[in-house]
Length: 79
Image (cartoon, rainbow, N blue to C red; front, side, top):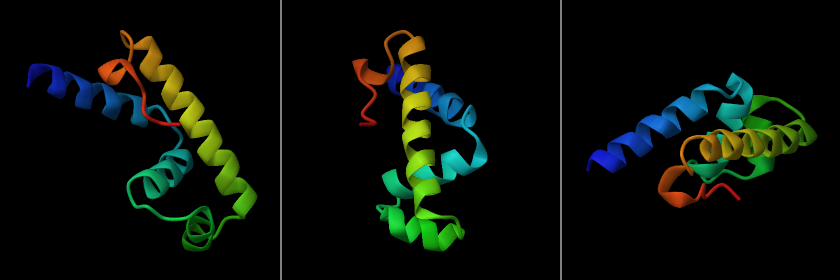
């Protein structure tokens, strides 16, 4: 339980380091199971911007998690 709480806290901190748009795009796709096209329409931003934001947020989140003692559960799970 302590490990799980530490993992959740680490993930929250990592997500907080993303820009608001990158975080929103990532969460919509990862948790909301929304397509890139649907995110584009919902946020009113071009599809290319959604794809770039998703790529950037996954890359940045992966790096932050790697810097935190091997990441969550030894793997990042974000692509």
